[in-house]
Amino acid sequence: MHIVLYKPDIPQNTAAIIRLSACLNLKIHLIEPCGFDLNDRRFKRVVMDYIGLSKIFKYDNFTAFFNKNKKSRIVLMTTKAKKLYHNFKFKKNDMLLFGRESAGVPEDLHKILKNKIKIPMNEKTRSLNVAMSVAIIASEALRQNNLLK
Image (cartoon, rainbow, N blue to C red; front, side):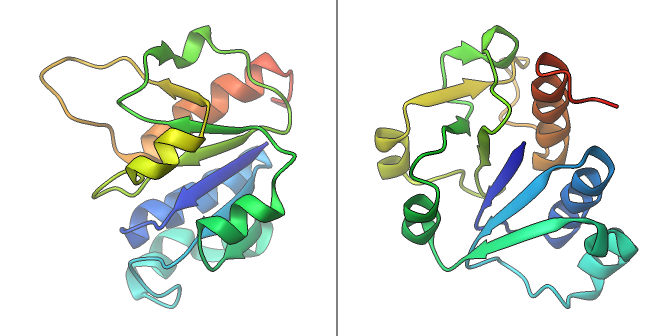
């Protein structure tokens, strides 16, 4: 299972997702530029030694990521989706794409990505923390594919 972070903004969220990936055996894909340096002390404080237990791939931009993963199914997590995550059939090698904390993903990505899902929320709220969203979606995807150990 793959977690894809599109230009992440907040070092602590990215670090928490990397820790989660180490614990759940997920692969992380970072589409740059990130809004912080991986040597940022806030990032290091949260990620601790889990970074060494995670498989991390970096891409200079979305085009590089897309070209490298053309044959994979990319699933966009977005509050703009109509389909709810618990009604979606995840596959073992899905690329689960999460947008920037500050802005999501650009409209052109919405247009080219067919699979879009969301987490149901109170209509008075805008969004969940990205690390929490990753945990919710990843655990459901792992559960559906019997990959939880």
